[in-house]
Image 1 (cartoon, chains in turn blue, purple, cyan):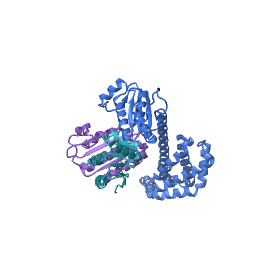
Image 2: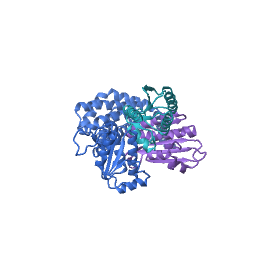
Image 3: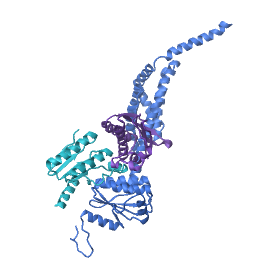
Length: 308
Length: 134
Length: 120
């Protein structure tokens, strides 16, 4: 009786030992075998993948030739990542690919979708190949799955990051468009500020103005804040910094339209209004700017030829 | 996400290395050229402090993710030098770097979104600063 | 790494490259003062167009250069500060005080010309 009981135990132990021996087969060998299989069947698997992409109606923004070209690159990068176990090259490729396809209107779910489809196509082909050897299939999948998942992750994250970068750029461009810096004369820029300014917009205005000073070689800038109702201390600081930074670029700043309230805020943060160039209104500011630049101001009574 | 990078700081040449790498990583993280300059400038100041006051230390650049999925860059400047006896004094604006008197810490704080400092007489200094993508 | 200093008439022009070490900056300070004396220069331009970061040390050294050369009776003009660098500088509180600045070399030379005309 006992012996009979022992027999199943013994064979179980034997089986375990056999499994242990087999499990100790290095993962590297398995991956190598896997990669060889994927390379051998490259044409076939890639075709199948492209077919499934079309079936799932992904990448509709691209032509067949484009899809084929990209599919080839993705397939090769995928296999290379599996082979080397390193993902830097794949990351770089993912960023590159994203830069190309985002302007074409390809969306995140499409990129995630096609990478997952590739993972499935490759997994299925592994099932087909090792269907007679369940143990081996399990081990191959143990080696394949974590790597495949990491690849999917890397590509998706790369795409999303690139997309976010593009969106930020577009937002920046929109903000710039909404506050033009005007060049009215050679070497003279006007920046009319209207409405509410938050610290982020203030910072963006400063950067925009400084770039404009450089591009237009401006020597005088008139910042008109007539249209600004109120300014908190943070934004007032930004204004002062803008004046100082402009000076570092060789430009003089004239601030016009300073309301008594804003003047008070500036004094509160320690600005010496005596040192800041301020003029009551925009017209007056422009005239002073022209004087600074060496233009003579023409009075209506005088004829042309008096000024420059 | 890229891995952390650590730069050993022992001479003023390392200050240049640290800020160049900081700029590169900032741009890689997605910061604009202007923001990368701010970050590089902050790193330059902190690395310089290490060289001036502690002889040796390190600057570590860490890409980070914050709550709500924000992405940013954290820089840790650390040394085991003499430390700052009175941290509050060093952070007061009278100690700004414009006169060349102090450690530039108030300025560094203005450049970044987050600023933290741990220091004490005889126990070294660690400054941790972070900037987030808008 | 030595900073090249050109002589254009009575003006010395120092062009700073990126990645300048502290030692290089101090070397520049010494070299400029020496050359101002040797050539009896009437003005100095320091071109920082290639400088990608201006920190407190660089700012302090430029101030020192300006003051030392001023003792020799010559003005120093800093030209070529990049927009992003200017922005970072003011955040850090580095305003280069009373040193004249200009957009680029051309503007810097024009400034020095005008200054010498005004004096005469």
